[in-house]
Length: 164
Image 1: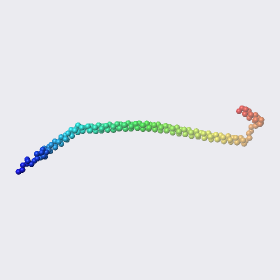
Image 2: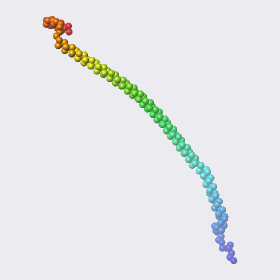
Image 3: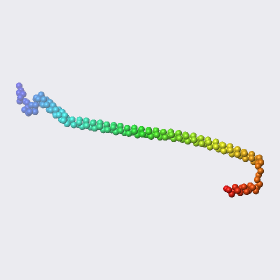
Image 4: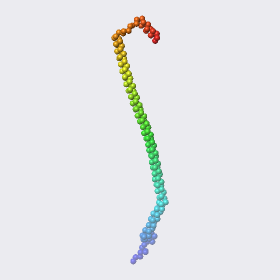
């Protein structure tokens, strides 16, 4: 038979290949040690990025809250401005109503005065017509009163001129 001990090489690497269980156990130990070291490293240094994220998200929340408060303040300011505008518009409308009433009153007074002037003009025209008709009737009928001589008329008109 053949001697097996003489055929196997004597290098240590080859001896490891001959024992696969030991090789697998060593690889498993290295793998566990690597995973453990990564877990420890993330536990100490991995928390810092998480904290940064939390801080950043809180800062964003604070900024959003500030922006919301600013919007609320601006909205309240707009509401106040709008209310002031409504109040001013109401005052202007009230003034417009009073001006309309005053204008209507003045127009009524103007119409009343115009009607009075028209009636006065009609009365004056009636008086003129009656005066004209009286004159025309006097001119048609000779006057019964005796006339003064021409000499008296001249003296009377001279006296009137001297007075005036």
